[in-house]
Length: 270
Image: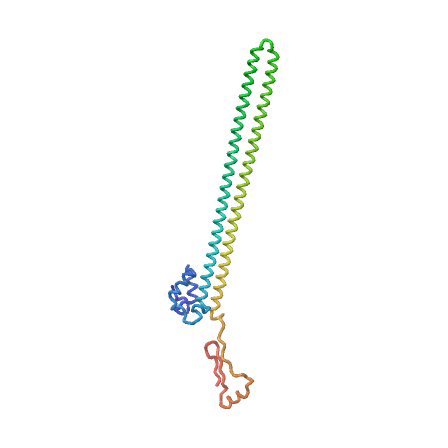
């Protein structure tokens, strides 16, 4: 630790600021001081509990610890929120699997229905052909008309069934796509809101910490600057109203007063 930045080789405020600027933390600086207590000023103010530099650094360490604990709590909260989002994603995947299974079941049902209709048609056609072969000569005209009507009825039924199944598939596909889009939008909105909230909290903590550091640094600089700290009060002459005392001093040839500014005697009147 370099202690040559202040007015002496003892560890002072200027050395503390230089150590912070070099990248050392308040905890590292405090640990060094605890191992080198002889580097502090011997006055009681700079000793632990005296309200001076040692206590200021110790308060800064406690502030750093509180900020670190708060940041860890925020990080844990973010991890919990991310776990909740992962659970939501799992639920979304499960719902998608259920929709896919439902669509597959509908397709299988459509295939089964079409096969049944085709089988019925074949059976009907075979019966009609047998009847046609038996009564061909006597019922050719009537059978031809009836057969034509059956074909038209079949075509109409088959087209209706196909149209209904197509409409159902299109409706299910639209509903499926809308559900997926809604879930994706909800997921993205929640994720962006959580990220923004986390970033705002981190920025607020950083700004608060910087402001507190600046205030602490300004306070320490003001106390360390000889031009801004409070000066010593000079010794004053006897009260001017004490005329008897002044007369006695004058009788002995002295005025008995002297003044000083700071630690130096400014004037002496004997």
